[in-house]
Image 1 (spheres, rainbow, N blue to C red):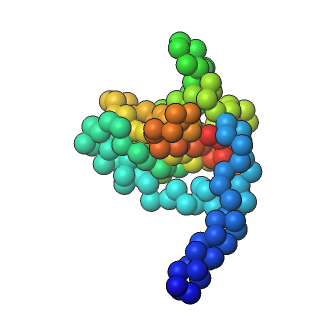
Image 2: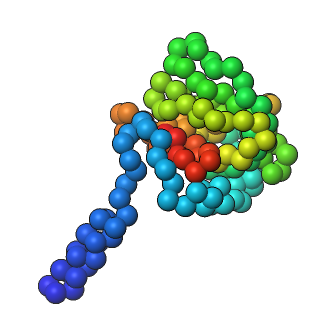
Length: 152
């Protein structure tokens, strides 16, 4: 019984020591500004495999450099769109739903960015979407990290 109470107390302390994300839909400040970009390292192999296998619906985490900022897609749900060049040289389009998550306003060509979302194959390299929380809670939450902030 004492071991159970100790485990429960440790679990409760860990829960309180590491709070979850901030207010849903708002950007949150990362407590370790450069760590998110480093934590996404090694993802090129997963993305290369997803491209080679022509996968759809694959959850991926990646990082790279903004190669181009495109106009927003305003048909249906609005999406901020930009192209990321991975370390491997491959490019992917990121389509970030700005009806469900904040826009990454300060995004500029040449800047580092990390992402987590769902990969959809296409011949140009693929699209990353679901870079936000699912308001219905049925889909894994995605994110974009730029300049020490997480957008979801």
